[in-house]
Image 1 (tube, one colour):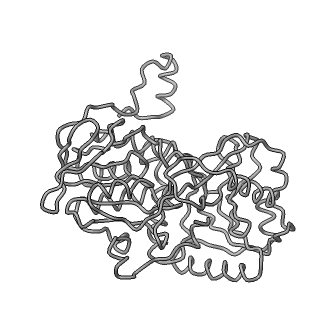
Image 2: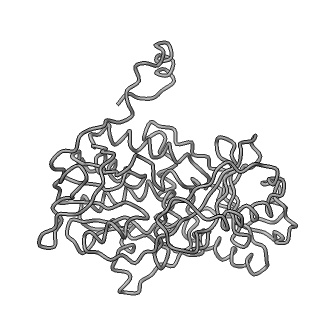
Image 3: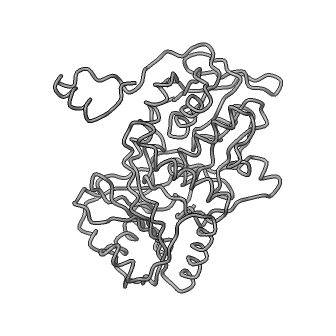
Length: 414
């Protein structure tokens, strides 16, 4: 792999930028692989990368029915945080945040991580007490968290309206949280995985599985059958559809989660601000756009678009927090097809079909979990047992009733 550096940028500029190598190859699928990863989003690519880098498995294929990053990985609000309530969730997401902190150097690709802090607002004394308990739990999980007064919040976010119909009485901040560039994360993992010999095959839809005796022996695709005794499903909102082809019924619901951006402007918002009561979360991208996130539509859908009522309510909520943003034009709106479990905690690990592994149920938290999701799934596949960080995220927790209800930590309603 040709390394990116200032010296190389200058060298190629002097050569009219005509000798850059493609970021990844466009190979034809082979007849067999050691591991097949279904899904060319962040989780699938990260899993393939760590399988190759940490476990020495180079005969790995990533099968993507569309193009790299064309799914939820390119349709999110790029927030990275680890302020989860329960110890098992907190440990997993903080592992992911620590990996994010070194990801640009590891991948030789700038993921534009900006740890500007995430502020969760409280609009009543009751909500403030809930935030205080949440912040204390986070600190007990060895994750940074700090309570803030209204004056401290105003100093960090001068444009925030503290005295709207929903007055701000306080909140808490995770200072290590922030945003990163979602496209860069996907491209960085794809490029690094390709350099380690992983085949990234786009335009290759999986339409079935080769099963025999309770085992997986390969997949049936739009480009022919491909053999492998280890297959990972990492397809976000379409997980239930794909799992059904393998005879599995997953306890997930798929719906559209909306987001939108305004026209770009100069830096005015140096934090991520979230309000569960007003129901919006707001940040500013590296390009200057104000990014608005809202809730999920109140009906099931596999579409990558949302409904106008939720767009309107999200904009209204954002303007309630930041009245000056009412002068901005809304540039575009999109949605991701999110897969939500009954306890809003992901499903990761082994399945009843031997050799078939699953990573799904990420709901609204998939992007922030990409590095840890790939790292732990690669370890699980390589050793055929759940990584310690995801041992409680398995399918078996549902019949046992061992749920991990992180609905409040998701930040949006679904």
